[in-house]
Image 1 (cartoon, one colour):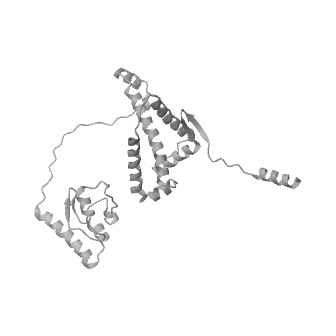
Image 2: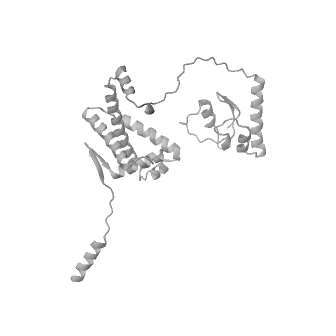
Image 3: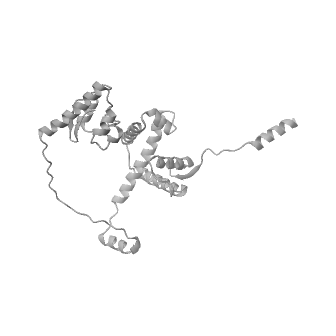
Length: 263
């Protein structure tokens, strides 16, 4: 019996406690966890924002402020519909999928098991943000600032801290685009047909041809490569041709507002 007690005592002594999460603050019905602060930092870094000057304390203050606005919005009967929130979430998910390639990669990046779990978290985040924004808009809309108040405020700013405003101009212009002779247009079309034939008949590299001859600054250095879906904001003529082709097929020369193309 004595040996058993000693064993239990040793086990308790050697047990290491690990804090999984903690409550940083409570604002109304909203609970801010330690993990919420870490997630916000991760999101900021993933968006390319610098977090060097952001402390946990300042970030907690911002999260508390957002939840205070959202809490007050609910108290003032400011509503955000499920349709509004879901539409925003759908757009965000669509953009994320386009950026990383698939929903599976999105879930992996955000460490979520299912798309339903990810959507639920996104719904909660977006609803809180939209409530907060509507409350802030309501507060700002009720503020009336007179020109005299603006002048007095500006006078109180130290000289070395006053903002510098660049010159603002209003201009009028006349734009006249030069007419391109038909024979010049035909030269471009003929050159594109020559490139197409060289690739199809002689196994020439389309990428090399694009680097040598393309005048598109967005794709020239990448061998003419663009990644696109039907939602990608290309001009209609370009997308219509792109999605009409079979894999490996090269289009005939066609014209858009940006010039002549083969894809």
